[in-house]
Structures are given as C-alpha cells and as structure tokens.
Length: 306
Image 1 (tube, rainbow, N blue to C red):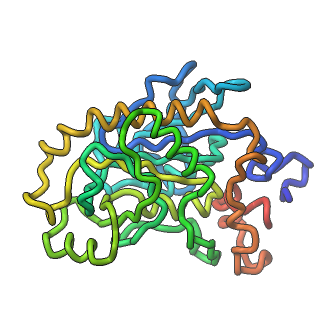
Image 2: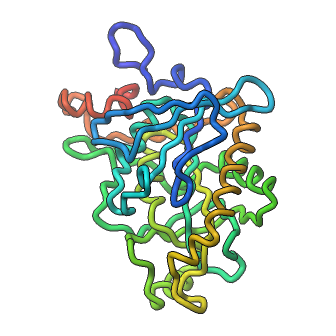
C-alpha cells in the first residue's frame, strides 16, 4: 500500500512494477551491452551515494510482444577502476530499483574449484558462501531493523531461464553451483582453495556479495551467471591475470549472447515471473519509531509497506 497521500501509486508497489524490466550488472570484461537499442546513459543519485557509473538504458528484443526495457551497469566502473571491496553495492542496487528494474542478472568472472568446471564453462549459481569483510551489506540500520529471507539467494525461475538461454550459446553450462565470495583483491592461498573445496563449493569470486543480499532487500529477482576463467590455485599453478584474460573474451561473448537469449524469452508481465516480496513482514521496527529522515531514505525499498 502506498504511503503517498496524493493517491499516486507508490513506485515500489506491485501496480508500478507490472512489467518486467531487466537489469544487467556487468563484471570483469563485460563493460557494455552492444545489443541494446535506443541506448542512452542515465546518471542516478541515491541516498547511499554514487553508483559505479552511469546506467545505460535501452531495449532488448522479445520474441513475442514488445521489447523488454533493459538497464546495464558496469560494476567496476568505466575502465575497471574499482576493486571489489571499493564498489558501492548499495548505490548500485538502489539505482537499478530507481530505474524500474524488477529482475537483475549479475555477470561475474570466477575461478573453478572443480575439475568438471573448466575454464570457459558457465555456471548458473544458486548458493553462496560469504567470506567478505567490511562491506556495507544491508540497507537497514540506523534505527530501522529488517530481516529478509535469504535461504535461497537466487531466483529459481529466473535462474532456470538463464541456464536455458546460456545453453543456446553452445557453451558448457552448469545449472547450479555454490560460489564462495572472498574479499580479494588477492587470489586465494592454496590452503584456502583446498578448504573451500572441502566445503563442496564449486567456484570462487569477489563481487556477488553483498550484491545479492541487497537485491533481495530491494525486492529484485536476482540470479548470477558465473564465467569460469581459470582453475583456482588448488589445481596446478597459481592464477595469473594473463591466463584469466585469455579466456575472458570468449566468456564475455557468450554472456552477451545469453542475456540476449534470456530477454527474447521473457514474459512481459511480472505476474508470470514474480519478483520476491522480501520486505513484506521483514521490518521489525514499529512504524511510529521510524524517523522522517529514515523514512525518506528507505522509501523506495519499504515505503509501500509502511
């Protein structure tokens, strides 16, 4: 329900999010989306600071019906200038929400912890292990307490569609996988790599968290396309940037094709592929104890529930 006394529909209410808007967060190597038509940059200010760069807003063709609105952001900024720990994940996700995104696909380069996940393979991750530290991981706090469900951190319906789209590229695709998200920017020690393998993790990267947690709080359907660029150092030799870059070009091309194929098959209405109503019942703080500044700061996220 809207908290707007003028009678206008709240921008986060279901009536305002009736049509799917696809967001794409590009990782290492994926800095632009050439397939977007009518593409134009949009600068966004957020209550949580500045996003990594201007968003690119355009359209991608849909097989049946009108094209889908799409919003792209290079996670590391233009020219890849931000370390994983320097990214303002809260601003990035809030900006996607401001631009109407309902479903967000994250693309991320990862190292493999399994012999069967070779460099060049794609993994549609469904679970995470959080090894990050010191990153702002929630929109809540400062007088507003909220707890969202995160047992299944990716959106099954979107992930299944992403996996099917990835398979159209001819690449080897793993439908599920557990991703260890480490702080970085250095790669793992051999002991750490072997530890993560003993935990039955499949791949390792540096950027999916807190991104996925924030997407859940923002009520975005989130999934992650992990691009295996190398075996982590458990395998034979230590990871080098040169070896990663050698695989990345083909991976990025497959990622672009995957996004295009995903968009082509998306339904028009969110009703057919619902995003999570994660904040419904998640706020513990009594509404009359949330001050005006915090209401304003969190309005796009929980204003329709207050």
